[in-house]
Image (cartoon, rainbow, N blue to C red; front, side, top):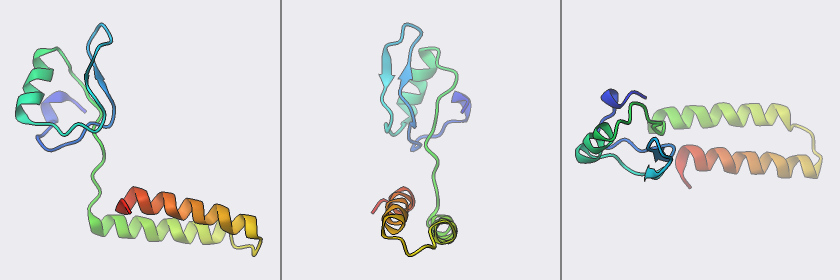
Length: 98
């Protein structure tokens, strides 16, 4: 995302490096006005921002993933059910953080 479009409160998805490769900010850092200005001053033009998913959309996306998993792993095979559960836990963590 262009640094001019970044807003305070957004979270970095990746580390931000300067031209020499030094890490300026780590992934997961929540941006403040002051930090955004410092990044601009350091010549940073683009950064990667974590996607924010609203709770309503998260629930819808999770339900869509569950349907896909049910279709893909509909066999009664125990190992297939274990794989399905792993995917379900992954998507649950991604969308709900639980």
